[in-house]
Length: 110
Length: 115
Image (cartoon, rainbow over all chains, first blue to last red; front, side, top):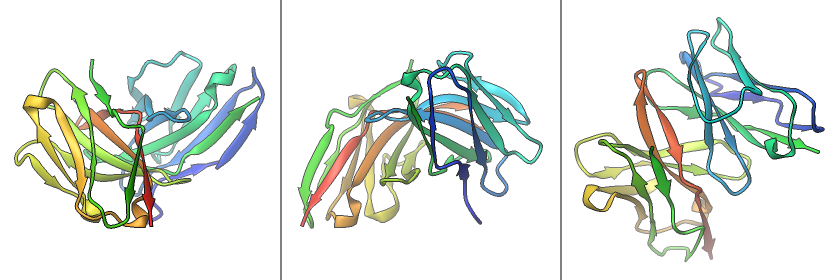
């Protein structure tokens, strides 16, 4: 079992650009959640996907959007990047219970 | 709204010494409580969780935590720290949702272990 995987590992973008991050859940998991972890902070919940729909969202602007595919993998899209979007983006998968986290994607916005 | 306070940004202990990391939460109902550990370049790993029942919870790697409702606390303890325990530790309170939960994390406590 590969666990939760995320790609890419690192990413550098410039302000105003758009970015897509990807997540493959742990085998058997049908729910994917995304978190933003700024430097020196705890993770903050962005949104959660289940059955290909966003079913819960944290306090993030509409620039942050996502998608879940039939195989339960997920994408996080961020439009019009700001310097403040620089962070570690974590994906977590679950099946009716404990969330398992991936290693994250480190996004740097210049 | 739920929130978590981890009052210690850094904690330094000697290898073999005991450890206690503090966590206070704010939540209107009976909380789901968690402790996670994050090593450099790694995702979060769940150490232990409390949903209900016995207020002393045993976790992995020799960690335990005690839920004290009267103090709104969920402190993490380990009797003897190993150098490999050096990492970032996050306390979280979870809001039940859709058969799972949505955690709110504290800002973390960085554990430094001296040889």
